[in-house]
Length: 278
Image 1 (cartoon, rainbow, N blue to C red):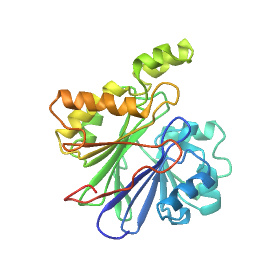
Image 2 (image 1 turned 90 degrees about the vertical axis):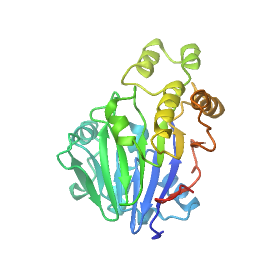
Image 3 (image 1 turned 135 degrees about the vertical axis):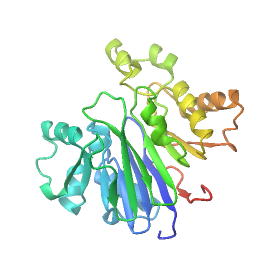
């Protein structure tokens, strides 16, 4: 796919596991690897990509639905795994890195000491996000002419998130739950408070507010991801975000295109250039 564009595809997204494919030129990345190696290989094959071609994995944080395949990817394929100091510390504390070759463990300082990461044909910037993990981050990935970004597992919208996502043509944004569904749903009171907290997950309504801001700064396509299986529905998430956009005189199909991710299989493959998002 050496055509000057960034190719972007959420391979799976939700509480069952998360992974996103990002590539340009000769460099192919996975952002998170929260399903089995076999599942990721099957998802990549559906978009014409071999798992063995992945250049590196970038982790957002240490929760299992984002790191499940790190051992097999590093041990069997020798793929380097990048994560913040805090994320690697938490992974090691859980005993999830015991079988990983130390040469595959790539650590960066989330305070920006090694900012940005130069990974072949892609440059990766990272930014902190508010979540109940040790040192969670979001990512902005550029090939020099255009960019994509991922911001999930975030309890609220921060000024740093706004700055990092501003002007990015394509963004994967969390729309985890509908607040009323969550309040009436099966979660325990403790878990409900966690999800609703400032270090929990972003609601459909707040996703709509951020989508509106992004649309006014040049974002042309937004994927809604990390939906809760128990506390959300794809059509509800889409309609809520669309309603907020429309209330601000923005069309969710033309001014900015809102797409849904899929829980267990690849979503629509996007191709991003300086001129267009296809």
